[in-house]
Amino acid sequence: MSANVMAPARGSNVLRETWIVFNRAMRLSLRNPMWSILMLSQPLMYLFLFGPLLKPITAQISEGATTNAYQVFIPGLIVQLGMFGAMFVGFGLIAEYRAGVIEADRVTPASRIALMAGRVLRDVVVLVAQSVLLLVAALPLGLRAPWKGVLLSLVIVALLGATFASLSYSVALITKSEDALAPLLNGIAMPLLLLSGILLPMQIGPTWLQRLSDISPLKHVVNGVRAMFRGEVTSSPALWGLFWVVLLTVVGLAVGARTFRKESA
Amino acid sequence: MGSPTSLRVLYPHAGGEPTSCWANPRDGAKGGLFNIDYSTLIEQTVYMMIEARGLVRTFKTRRGPVQAVQGVDLAVADGEIVGFLGPNGAGKTTTMRMLATLIQPTSGTATVAGCDLAKDPVGVRRRIGYVPQSGSTLPEAIAGDEVVDHARLYGVPKAEAAARGQRLFEELDLPGLWRRQCKTLSGGQRRRLDIVMGLIHDPKLIFLDEPTTGLDPQARANLWEHIRGLRARGATIFLTTHYLDEADALCDRILVIDHGKIVGAGSPEELKQQVSGDGVRLDLADAAQAPAVAKIVGELDGAVAVETDSKTVNFRIPRGGSVLPGLLRSIDAQGIELEGVEVHRPTLDDVFLTMTGRSLRDEDADAPTDKEVAA
Image (tube, rainbow over all chains, first blue to last red; front, top):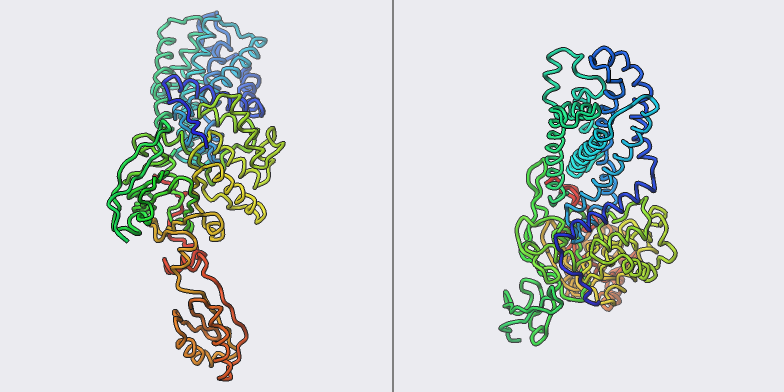
């Protein structure tokens, strides 16, 4: 057999390999878009079936006349989308693991980081596309927000998606079992959702619940996105939200990278 | 036979040019660490594709640490087909996964395809192909896409990857399946697709983990042909199997592994020779006559392992076929009636039984399976 050995790896190969992995993952997602559509149906249902209930509540709690219900509600929904849309991607990875794909990937000289990053990138692209669709759907309902704030919010959704996708892949690779993954993810997702003030602003709750929700970084992220939707891009809540989401992303990607590097993964 | 003083072992190296080192024959001229007759190797250059020493792998399980591989030494020369034979849980897959850089040895060293396993795992990965037991393609994906993407992770450009992949599809008897979804392929086709995946970067050394498990007999025989074909292309093949017939039909050399240790090594013929003689089984009409038959058998020249079990007498003897006529006459002369006679050449199952004291077919449950990775 001819010695057809490839050139040794360079640092830039990580990007090239990430692109290859991303392309493969994206192609598979596009081949079967049902999953992405189903994931979008949840926030759309919240938008149409739950949003109208919020109108009177928002009127109660917002002193400023410029606020409308959807300016409060949509930021919560896109954060929720960023979180839940990415949280369950681990199931897909378990399916790949079962089929031997992860093992086959791991015997290639490709960077372990690229194997994760390519898949995370696909999830981020899908999430941002879903968020844009959600925003467009909310326009006829009366959503009005400055474009700068909206763009920055999409960046936050992308970072949140990257965080939760990496964490989900990590847990999936460690447990290698759908039966373990489902309750674990739900156990994390429920308190995060309830304490983040995604559905209803935490201000309307009792003080102890507000204090408790202060611990959740996601609450600050939601508040940040709400500030951005009001156009207060450089306000303190917006910057805190940005700070927390960047911190979460760093932690999420680090955990994911570590798991993908680990041998048993 | 004089003991050679040194042996030149060449390792295929990264740049294609072999590097050499001088290895002292260990533990005498014959057998030794790798069970190689070193005397025949003098003045020859041997390219070692795999050379492993003292490989150990311990898994943490809920019941405490389990040593799945307990100090494996092995050597595979360039161009060989070597089989790892052993029951489930013997440590075959674990050893193979260590050699393929998928898990790290707890201790021990190895050189695989010329690269040090610990220092240059990426170099190892570039030079080996690994076909896992679990498959390597997603059921929903298009076969050709999976092959091209896999090749690109090895740095093969897209167009060349497609050309190579399609050529391999022809060679491995998968015509017209390039654009098919993987899940629509038959078991045998899926397995050959896995082999295409493992071959796409033209590796020097190919690991096949239980290549024919789950295939029907026809597909197995067909795959064996293809595996022999890989060697004809110049590849070295290291495979695991728990099928005796597979090891017998395919391998130049077999390493028998049990409870994480190599308990025997040699060509199928050599291993069978270690079992003394052919097995003979006499079925009697009357169990009461068994001791008399055992006595006659015991007086035969070279008869060993004489065992009676109610109406049957089993023993081993060299050239069983030629002693049979005389034996039957002796038995007949005493008026003992036989219901049946059977002579069988030693099989690898006999080998395994001789080496480990149990049959390969008794799948033991207490050993951890190779897949039980709780580390």
